[in-house]
Length: 260
Image 1 (tube, rainbow, N blue to C red):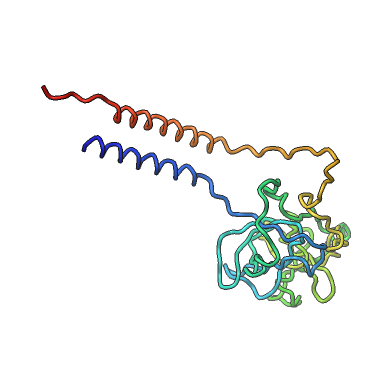
Image 2 (image 1 turned 180 degrees about the horizontal axis):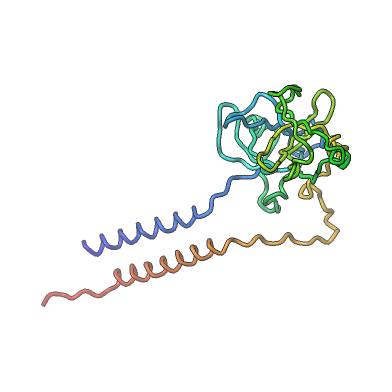
């Protein structure tokens, strides 16, 4: 009876170790916006985050063929996601109708998943010590509560591009402007930048969506190496499981002394 109890106990330990090894690294899934012509109508709307809740206006759009990552938080009809290093909200129904879970055989880690662009303040704005207006919402209200005026000379951290939005028939950039003391996220007029001609029509398809003909030699995507820490944990678990298996076999077949 004692031997049976020992075997059952060791088996339970083996099972718990095996299941814990499966859960070592759980990553939030990536989604890809369904392939279509790269237009505003085919893109995925992102809503600004205001104190942890979705705003009532669209901040920018994810172009078709590009990716976003779920942050795992759901509030009402919206799901929190990350895009271009910003936390924004997506309508949950849009995820199911306009996107799909990203295939695992494509390299989409980090900034390669997003459409990004290096932009800077236009040279003439800097030379004239001009003012950049960062509007907080799509109403583009030009008052102290609807925008922030920033001197070009105070922009020390640059302009971090997040996405595009068409407002009143004109394209605006949704960005974060970084100064020495603060950062301000909102819409700016492209005329303030050195990249004033960026539109949805000029955005290329994501490289992952471009189909290479079968008769053209292809280069395999580089294998993404697992972190060394995960390999160490896995090796330790395998070693422990092997030792416990040997102990179980020994206990099962260990000869017992018979009473004379």
